[in-house]
Image 1: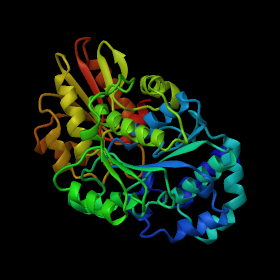
Image 2: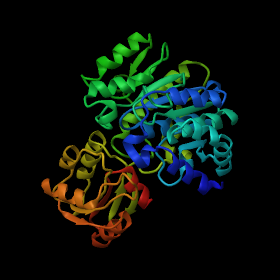
Image 3: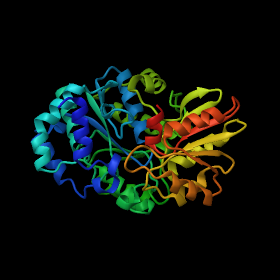
Length: 406
């Protein structure tokens, strides 16, 4: 199979959360262990940092990779989901895995995947570990897919575990209280491996302390320990917390003596995240007059912060291109959106996309007024056509809406 056929097979044959949602979630790590043994345990050859969290884990992972690259290391980076091309998920020093490696890996292991019902995410994790091992990376930054305790990435023993923050998202799997979600994400804390917590609340801090105590792991609360940060090319207000989390993690990596990262590496790394890693969709500016911003924030915790930043912008009229997936709690996220904006409702072009009819009707309950469009691009074009130079256009609600306009 060529690359297009290979990725289509991966997307279509097996449960894929990005497209299908709930049916793709596995209840334990049995399959992952089966797969990783079949691949001769490539993860055991890797030094790694494991990053979980409701929001910010992608940005934090990319910051860490950028800093380590600036220090001269060969850095593997595994993240999800992808925006345009599957290969974005697996990079070394900012360069996507080759189409050839993806095809060879799938073609070689296809019969094993089929006979053991290996999921899309499990095979992606196996591919990343196999690639990083064969390419002999110095260190790999591994982002959790969802949760932590039962995530396919949770077979590694990292140098540091990182949990950026806790909010309510994917509650049908992770629980509907902050404590329950913290327990699931705290599942990446390993015996005697230090853990960095980016942000905490009165509900989540005791959960983390209990787990760290149980594992005899040193715990570091970055928001209490880091007072000074450096400028970054990731300019969303929310990146302050992610920078603190990345800095505390780098301090621990430095303390281990295996890696040497100096202050200049940290400064340059934070300032060149996009250039070094190719990260997109985080308070990304697409135009100037009118100012156009897209952001992948898609849950209450993330949208609250991003929409507060939108409200602080100076503009005459606010235009919002909005689409969501069908498992979002609209009663929770729609009240966050400003009533004064003009809305352009759209459906991301995936199986999980919520129909515009439902979104527009529900939005009207919260006095959010606008029209529905047949596609994300059509909604975006209409917003652009209607906006004056002094206006502001925000595109978001879902990673998949942002993916379609990049």
